[in-house]
Length: 365
Image (cartoon, helix red, strand yellow):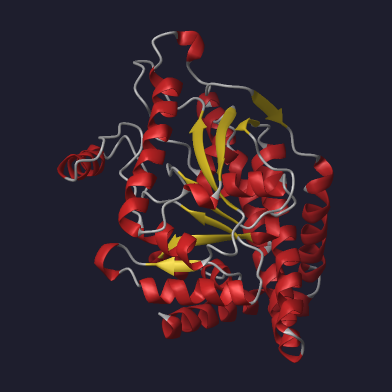
């Protein structure tokens, strides 16, 4: 009985942050929607600038929970520029927390509002969030033969024309690396072998289409490409085998003590322009990732495990960057829920915001 209570209490540690993050979503969408309507009377740049500020507020609150609440240590290797840049961010993909890692780096460059994602098409149906991500500049793509290159290119060129600050996050593997899905890993390795590419152990064979379209569409606008490799400490079992990376729920339950982030900043001039050659370049970058992760997980010398080679910085995010957003959104939502009319508006925002979002993404599909 006591053990069950302890386990239940432990698992409930994610409830508070989840309730706050999801609970403030209608308030956020309502404020953003009002600005969206008002901005139709103003030059487009005013909408973009304030939308980026809105996004910064919400994601800063998210980072309060994922960094300050969990107490996770963020360890950064390589040279993360201090200033904002227009970049394409390429990372290995293991779990949903990978999205948050991009935010963790961006906020340290004061570029959190500029983060936009290339996402798999099914995520556009997320209530409220799916619609909003597309409004913020996110791009939904379908896999393989259904990938619409022209649509993605047009959206990115429109962003460039509007001079939208760009921190475009792409996961070239197309799906998560999951040790509990050996068939997916085996199929990826078999494909690489057939194509004459190096077989990778700790990452999947990357797909080049979205990366090529992004870099090619914005080649005269981008400052660099960030090649990011992420490893979550504590994802090895007692036999030394790699385990599944933490989900958002597990992360918020404080099951990940440290996150290791290795960043290479790559100049555009060092990246081939033609897709055929970029494909080879991208695979070579994932070979480098694989070697880093082999060192992290499998190094024969135990002292070399659970870290990447080279100098690192233990980066702690200032409370000033996150707590004000939590207090602002939390207070705004609480004040809304204190009145009957506010509660009705809150519920209607959830319902009608979701329905409008579904209608919007259906028309735009």
